[in-house]
Image (cartoon, rainbow, N blue to C red):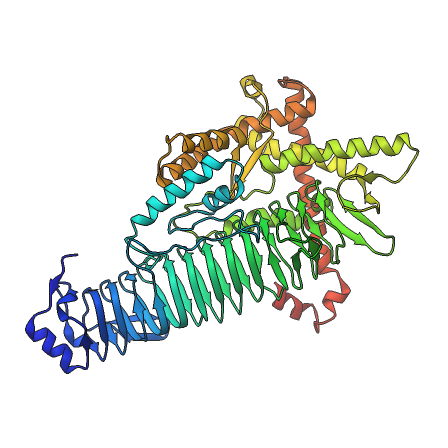
Length: 602
């Protein structure tokens, strides 16, 4: 925008309306500036004011006139057609167009070349995984920086890329995008709020926000406190949340709890009263039920322990976990105080602390065998609820994908080993090793059924990708060439082959990727290549099950027929698992009759 100095007449008008300035020569305005919209305000340092007119800025039922009243501004740049009223201190911020700022006690940002940028310490309380957030950082960026700490040169290069990125901000985090609403908030310091006309963000009735980045379409409200944080797109923080040193993925909700030193991937729900989630990596599509105490580290003398959970993590009511624990994808934890560290290597499993028998019980493939409605619904609902417009972070929403398929293959191998051990020792009970720290036994429930279910899950995963492409035609044998990619890395929701991540790291280290924009373009290219990689992986999974490098026509026909049976099984199980709720007499007990229940529940 072209700015100009105030005219003598404009200065006189501003003074007459109760405005003051340390130096009127440092107050610059746009070409269509109307001084009649500025009342009772104080200006210090360099202040740039955009166009204001006889209009209103609306937020629901609240409509405030354009302009500035009863506010103090220092070293700010205000966009066109904003409403700024009763802001006791606004300093160091660049405000976009059509923004509404109302009843704010203090909104400040560090400015100048010597601005101090806050480090965020996720996944671990001792600061050994610290990162420096910036506006435009994705969840995958943050995870990659925090995770690969063993490569010192890589970590050093990421800091250099970030400092170069921050220099373009011209001092501090203090940016507010277009059409943003911030009101009834006590303190905002060093916060970037991404917002646009199509995907605007809201911040209201908050206590304090410091040193953070807020993505497009976010909503923060009702008494939250957040310090050192990075939010993806369409994140909701509300109802007394206390957040620190945490990255929160797109389409997530956190409320009524304490979350600290964590990285949470997209589509996470934690909106009931929990004790805390501390020093954790949760890979998204997850839900933390009420009463959760996740991350007690009193079993160690230092704060250097962590919890790592694959996507689909679901600890039930009042679950208590100890550091350090690790969970395969789609682990469901029954209500319990788990006394020891866990390393659950079976995906889609139900985990239960059986206190009466003094053992840990694990049922593999529980979701597939007994909760198909939820398993199918979860894959669809996460994609359906994705309201992001910009989608800087790529996300695989399907619960059966290359990462979980490889976990299933490992799970099948483990079940086979444990069953052979039981057979050799003449036991009917199948025991697992290495899942729980301690001397008590870990019992595998329904191991045979789980082993078969894992097979069906692999066939379903592969055929739902291949069958629509090839039908009754035998897939190209070249899909079986080369070794199957067995290690996939979940980078903020995007699945990337390990060798591609290794190449990306090397290219950052050697300077081939010399900016975050270049890194993001590489991830875009990998996302475009992912469907073909997934197709090849699906074919090679079938080859693994057949113990061959290539499939013949008879085997392909067999898999197609089996896939048809699996589809019917899925359809039947969805009805059966959902019907358990509809026919539960205790669930029906609170309703007068079926008509009332149907009206309430649908």
